[in-house]
Length: 294
Image (cartoon, rainbow, N blue to C red; front, side):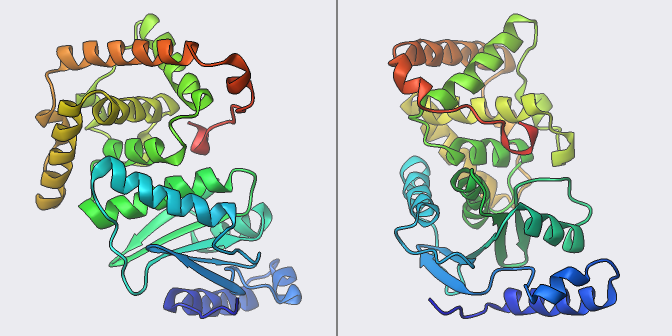
């Protein structure tokens, strides 16, 4: 499908050409005539506009996973993503090498990663590449974009916990098993989960792999624990949006002691549920190393 370039695409293409003409050591990209962002094909699903060079269609797994994310987001949070004229722009670069060049040129301050979300004014942008975990990466970063549109700026742990929650189909036992067993092992070794501590984190560079797992676990507890906890959490998310990011969610949730007890009970219940799954089914679902070292 012929591409209709968005304003951000035109801007990036222009900057790329100007920058690489002046940058020694990057001439090979100019020689190939390859832009730093995909420009050949464009396909839309719901609020997402996906740009790529790989002939994506509405039936492609990468496109279908975004349609499924939109459905899951609305089903779990009761929020229908707004379908703006411009949409949430998603750029799927050709391969890891191309993506690494793109990051180094435009965002050298970012650590190495497979995907990222960028909010700039009213624009919401996702960048990634066509790798073996493309669908997972798309769901995680596109979830950030949907959350930003629905609630504005959320506390870091809530934003990351929800993105972790939505990045995979939670019916996949392998994904539940990996996170659940690691957290239970941590608690058995003396670690204590703490919403108050998570609420002090303000930068992703402060978050450890266990912080990501803990953020996921709190979100999972509140959305999948029971009807009361889910209703409370959704109400607090709405209040968070109305407060323009000034409300501390942890201060509005349960007291630390009761919350920790509820967390442990929820993880044990998840472990029991996973144990009842056919081992052959779990074996078919590989455990990948997590995004951003989670």
